[in-house]
Image 1 (tube, rainbow, N blue to C red):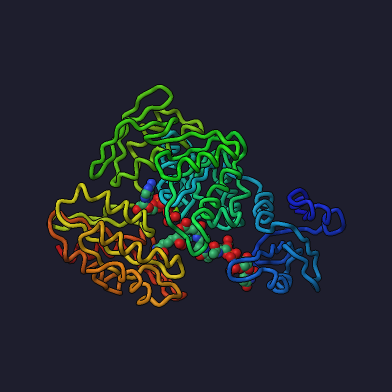
Image 2: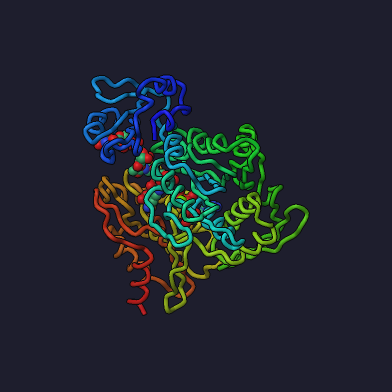
Length: 485
Ligand SMILES: CC(=O)N[C@H]1[C@@H](OP(=O)(O)OP(=O)(O)OC[C@H]2O[C@@H](n3ccc(=O)[nH]c3=O)[C@H](O)[C@@H]2O)O[C@H](CO)[C@@H](O)[C@@H]1O[C@H](C)C(=O)N[C@@H](C)C(=O)N[C@H](CCC(=O)O)C(=O)O
Ligand SMILES: Nc1ncnc2c1ncn2[C@@H]1O[C@H](COP(=O)(O)OP(=O)(O)OP(=O)(O)O)[C@@H](O)[C@H]1O
Ligand SMILES: N[C@H](CCC[C@H](N)C(=O)O)C(=O)O
Ligand SMILES: [Mg+2]
């Protein structure tokens, strides 16, 4: 593909430059990582959190880059260097052009908690309606014939647009993706053409990356600017931030559709929270539906309604969408019942790794726990340090027995992370080794107790330093239960 055809109408400055001979340069690939550049590729230099990509232009050219795009001029380069105002947005739009196609109907959801559950439920409703559907997010990519483990919640734009083209090639027509605040802030999904966008809730998260909660919220609201005007914006109505999110979507020119008790698109009239199911009477477009979501966790009804909002807004008949809710399977590691101790105590694995999520999950099992709630958790290294004491406090308040252990320490000293949690968790037991902590917790269980192993959910590894050691909370809980029986 000629550079002019790839990038001619993305940025005014670049378009001007491409009127000359550089427009004729052939481009065989695109990357923002000099280490992935091959002969004939376009290298887009991004100013990142750790490094400035323009420092790697020479490496990219040595690897065969045919041209370079950067936010500022770079001297002494033997291939054309095009300067543009916003290289991250340029990368996303150029990747979209390069890979060409995406599933016809794409929706994206943002919010602090519930995104993975919402994309999973949306995919399941579409599939129930007979559509070829996919989900993209924290747990990876799931589509007919595909279940790929993932690392980022929102993939980088080149991987994302490549993936979307592959999915379209495999016949996927509908895809739901998670929009993380990092992804939105870094323009990772600017190249995706969206049919609808959604919001779940807002709580404390990523305060290491975003200077204030308002900045974090504003990053999330970028999603509604990416959506073509007059498109459906599905907003959970019962969160503290719901009104602000609806206002932001309205300001962006979107067709706001709220769901929840205060919702007008789907209105919840009555909810009954059972241990393994959430039953609700909902009203939509003058009809009344009784829905039964067969999942633990009272928050799952909220996620299910956002998913139903997406499905109905993309053409699924309401009766079919509400019927599909009765068959939902939980996303792996989201209040997932792993097993029962022989005395009947229930053991769950959950991905709560931020304060609100931890409070929610512990509160949601309380009504069904006649004995004690035992929680095993830690906090990840190289992430928001401020949440550690808050999570210590929450665990102490909502659980009866608190065991503090390691999550993914990454480059930090694990003892330090644990001590920051322990400082706010009087009476908690500290067991560094996560495997030992899980065994200890399982051994403590008596009839009527509930164990929540929180923080790592579906993850299949533990990141210690730069190494990923194989580790699964699910497998460890099962082994501990088997040993105890
Ligand atoms: C802090 C952060 O978000 N970093 C992401 C970001 O990196 P960055 O652009 O800041 O990269 P950088 O390391 O400063 O380097 C700058 C540039 O130089 C380039 N480079 C670097 C070295 C080299 O030799 N050659 C070279 O060209 C890099 O490719 C990059 O383009 O963009 C990269 C590509 O898109 C991401 O892989 C990377 O994710 C890192 C690995 C990460 O851990 N991100 C987490 C925090 C994250 O994004 N999480 C969110 C939220 C999850 C949630 O909601 O809970 C997610 O969506 O997963
Ligand atoms: N609607 C909700 N309200 C509050 N807490 C929730 C909600 N949905 C899920 N949770 C909690 O948050 C955890 C993560 O849920 P989920 O993976 O669906 O969210 P997410 O937004 O994708 O999170 P992440 O950004 O970490 O990928 C769950 O394990 C549960 O503890
Ligand atoms: N997407 C989140 C996942 C955190 C999961 C938790 N187990 C941790 O390592 O902190 C992040 O990268 O911040
Ligand atoms: Mg997620």
